[in-house]
Structure formats: structure tokens, C-alpha cells
Image (cartoon, rainbow, N blue to C red):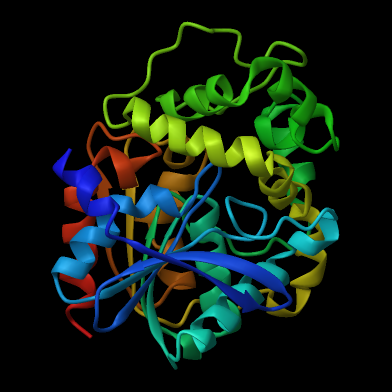
Length: 320
């Protein structure tokens, strides 16, 4: 309960950025640490880190990305390209009165953070990224084609492509059960959704790092916003591939620390561990300082191991 009381001290406000109204949560004074969430997450994913970073002398800022929470939810898939999302964050950094910030990303937020560093490295002092390694653009094949070839049509990203299909299934199951199934997923195997049979287990338990109070907060916000905004990130994947052709072969040229759980499904995709540990990652991210593989940890490591993640963040950014 002490933690819950601390989270109530986090400040909230709305900002106009890049043509949308964005909700941000913030606390503390000092150098800005921008915390970027994934799917199906919100600013709230970072509640532990916001309080801890503020206590250590930083100004922690966690937005709801476009399509999530209390930030605007544009209806069109074409409003969710990586150029839009990175543009929102560049505008946010400017609105905060900053020339540069530290950045921490998770899941989709990690992908956004990689692209922020790719497009606007001048805005980033250093990056701590988690769960999703940098993926250089493959000019030979679109991403969805590769995913279907590797994992089949039931792979969750492929299943999300048909507008309205996932939304209808999620509506049938109910927001709380959908979120509970996502957060409780603790397997190195790819996530698949057989058509009309996703999340059949209605008796699934919350993971130990997520309370009913936490679950109620997430559910209340997704009840309000719906899932379409978040799903549109996946639906824009091939469009992103087309729009980023000019950055083919570009490298990440900011200091980076990367953290991943050994039971994270992303760490166990074919070829990923070889890429991370056998030189490919370092070649594409030449200022990669350290890779941390957390043992017996799954995908939602930000909440599963909040204190350790905060320590990793602070130990790295304190160098700059």
C-alpha cells in the first residue's frame, strides 16, 4: 500500500503534441528520463520506475502513446506509422523544454525508441531498451511476409491484421480477461491465436507482480479507449517498412544498454540469440555498452523485476 500511496503522488497533465492531445505522467526534478510503454500497456507500466527515478534525482516522464489510455486515439491505421509515433515523442521532448533526454523503452516502446534514435539521435543522451532488440530493415522482404513464413497465420501479429477481427474477439471475452491473458503469458514460445479460439482459459490467474488494483486500472483505461489504437501499431508494420527505406543499413549511434529476460518469447525467436551475442547486434548498434539477460524472467520484466530494472537504468545513465 505504501507503493500505491506513492503512485498517487505522480502528476498528470495533457499536452498538445504533433496534432494530438497526449497524456503524460511525471514526477521528480533533474535530467529527464522518457519512459516508453508497449502493448497492451500504459504509462502505468512504469509506475515503479517513475517513483524510484524521482527519488534518485531524475525527472521521470511516461506518456500514454497515441492510441492508448488518455491520449488521443486516431481511427486510421495510417495515423500509426513509426514516423507519427516518433514525431509525437520529438514534439513531447520539445514541449518539456528539453534538447536531449534519456530514453527507456519496452516492447513496442522499445521499437519506437530504436527508431527515435535512428531518426533523431540528437534528441537522445543514452538509451536503455528492453525486451525487443534492434531489427535492421530487410530490404528483400516485407515483415509480415517473413512472420507468416516463420510462424504461420495464427501468429498473433498476423492475426491482428484484419481490422475488427481481434477487436470482436476481445469484446466477446471482455477487457479484463484479455489483459490478464497477455500479462500472464510466461513462455518462450511464439504467441499464437487460433481463429475464434484465443484466450480460452477464463480461469487464468494474475501474475504475482500484478495486483487486482493494477488490473482494474489497466482494464478501466482499455474499456475507455478500446484496443484498436494499440492494434494499429501492428497493422502499420508493412507501411513502416515502406516508409523507412531511406534508413536501410543505418546504425543506432547513441549509447545503449539492452535488457531482456531469458524466458521472453522475443529472446527465443529463431536467430535472435545469435544476433544479440555473436556480433550482429554490436555491428548495428556500435555504441552498445552492455547486454543483460535476466534469468527466469519473462516479457513483462519492467513490472516483474521493477527494482532491478531501475538499478540497471540508473547505473547506466549515471555515466552521462
